[in-house]
Amino acid sequence: MEASRTGLPFNFFYVEANESIVYSYTKSFNAFAAKLSDEEANKLSAMDEVLSVIQSQYRKLDTTRTWNFIGLPLTAKRRLKLESDIVVALLDTGITRVSKLQGSWI
Image 1 (cartoon, helix red, strand yellow):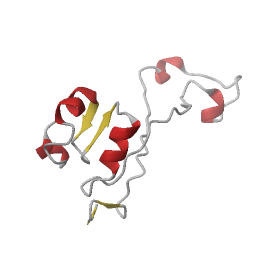
Image 2 (tube, helix red, strand yellow):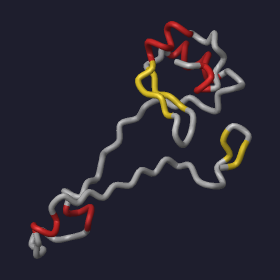
Image 3 (cartoon, helix red, strand yellow):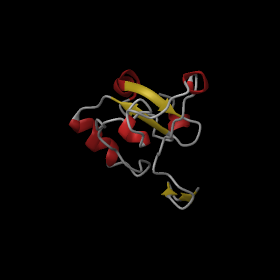
């Protein structure tokens, strides 16, 4: 973990945290995913530099392979050649232009 990238104090569980990090997000916002104990998560969330600590949650995914998701009956006329190699995805992060993050507006 690079303290300068995450904005966290350099001495925060440096060795343990570095080994616990699963992924770092640096393009649109500064964040990371890590495997932490309850104690580590509580210490991290108590820091002034930390906006929030959120526990992972499993979600049921809807896909274009689910007929109910796209609202088509199983008997819908298909054009397989036109449908191939098309992927449509939406990632709703919950972050909007009016979301307040770390004291600044996006």
